[in-house]
Image (cartoon, rainbow, N blue to C red; front, side, top):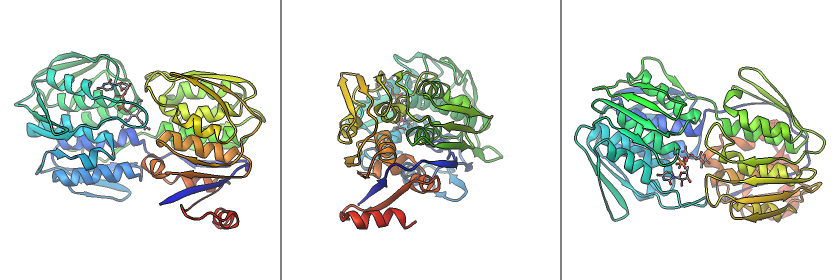
Length: 433
Ligand code: EPU
């Protein structure tokens, strides 16, 4: 196993290209299942979660070829199962449920269970698919689903759920008649999925709003041109934070500022100077950050996936910041690790009060989930001395080439074996690029 070692205190400067969005690439790759044939997809990030998805598609009988353009052949479905060993590594595997039911009439998917950030039930996925005519049986930790031809329905989600909306949407495209999904999630990744499905011949309107209308069609086929996945707004935001915590000057290219309105507004509150064009965002960090308030909300509100990174900013601000997490019930695991680096944070339920300090000090810290890992890396970039981030497999699930990208911006950072402890050897590992 490896850990990431960072020598903090170096100002990051330069430009970095945003990768394709993990949370758009995953549902789109899985949605290829509803359109039999050879698919070509561009801007798919190189991530552990993408490899897991391609191997899941392979187990279903759909081989893929990885390259600058990812190819998936969904002509044949041989198996309709997502077993526990796959789902346990990647919750988004439950996204096969809708497409498999719609195309194949059955699906057997392991229940994902909870994870580090919360209980994360999938009741809304099941209720929505049930409204379309699917039937479920739970046994042995698996959901066994069967259905004849699905029928359009009018369904209202109890709360906006991103993958829940994607799962039901991807089934409804092949249902008989019209489906209306209300209180749907509005994230840009759902718009991208709907755009992809429409390019396969689906008839979806309203994506990006809380009401989706889907006119079912009898069959779909792969689009004639490769579909290019939208940029990763969370990765973009994370690099902007790297400029903010190091007083740096970073431009993220190949991105889309319109997907980050709430994040950019809070970064401005924190004293950062931001300039945008249609596809780039430049952030110049201040000498000392200012305190701010964030409340996480479904899109277009402030995204929960940027909460941990902004908490790192708050630990360095000149005053008291307030952070409220309303999406997941246990998403402050990074707070205790940041406190090991000298941060002053008090958490009470879903609320954190952060009293900024002039600087953090390097320490060994443990990543608990993907975005917590990013928050700890950011802390390490700003801290005095050496920081070691353990359990970095979380990071590999969602950030494409992060260590290399940060190095190119001037960070002293490297990956080393977990057992390497000698401070001089660690220092050498991060300077020998
Ligand atoms: N919820 C239910 N029942 C359901 C579904 C959701 O109670 O059937 C609750 C959840 O427990 C949570 C809230 O609804 O409290 C919203 O969860 P949502 O379903 O929207 O989350 P998700 O679809 O499981 C996606 C992203 C997450 C991101 C959230 C929120 C993907 C693959 N994952 O998860 O991304 O945090 O939406 O925006 O799209 C990440 O990338 O690090 C990550 C965790």
